Image 1 (tube, rainbow, N blue to C red):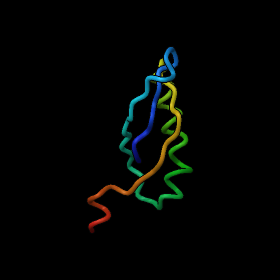
Image 2 (cartoon, rainbow, N blue to C red):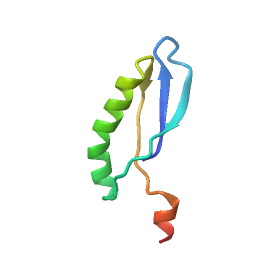
Image 3 (tube, rainbow, N blue to C red):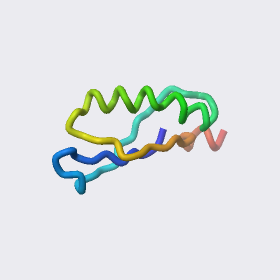
Image 4 (tube, rainbow, N blue to C red):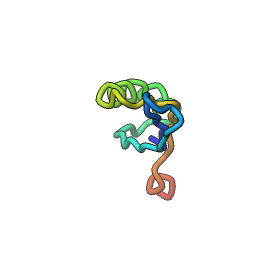
Length: 65
């Protein structure tokens, strides 16, 4: 996937980027549809953080192949 800005619920101005590595080999469009479940699960495991947005991207190695 891509870099995801996540922010503290207790201090929404304090954000950082998080990277989730998913085993999705489909198109970027399919990644966006399927990633909702992964982001939701990640959010459930990190209750003090709020995901602001996310994006999918093709890994650099896949782009060069």
